[in-house]
Image 1 (cartoon, one colour):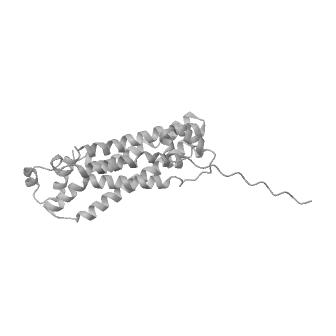
Image 2 (cartoon, helix red, strand yellow):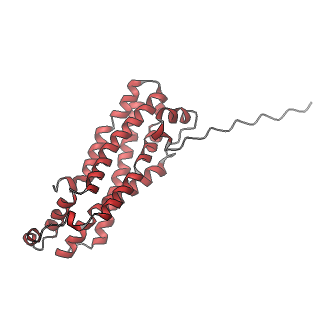
Image 3 (cartoon, rainbow, N blue to C red):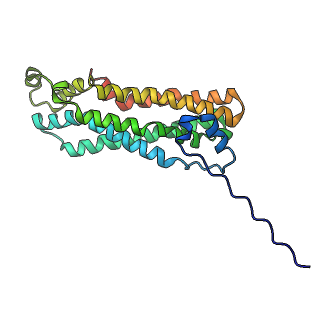
Length: 232
């Protein structure tokens, strides 16, 4: 008697889109739970947010770098712009690693912190684009140092850049970047808590997964904006 063909395995469920975390973190977690854990599942979202973060910061401080090169010479502006963009990108990726590592320490493997925190970065790209647009539209009159201040700085490129940064720090673009960096991290923590609670079934572990990385992530955000914040 011929054997019957084995039944085909049921298809594995599809993972939710990263943006689903923003609209319903508990539903996101329930949809994610039956899927195979993949730490790199939402790495593309993190990478996009990191690149746009670097671009936003470089666009914001671009006038200060350019003015310093025009008035006092020094390093080529293009090299400094690239360094600023790469620095912002690196710090955002480092923030993700902090969230992942300390989130796993708090919520455990069941919390799927790499995927939860990775998806939470979907909150940031539109905001970084808005910062970049605002920075590029900011008129020189909103930040440019006075002629007397520039005369006092003479040919000191560092001093000229600090004067320009002090002006840029008071622009709407700088305020928005600060809000995105700090409040965005708080929002990511809140979204992660709701998802962790659904995935782990334990409020204490969910709270630990959300709070353990919060302060270190905020510190990294402060470091990223320190040139602006300390120039006021």
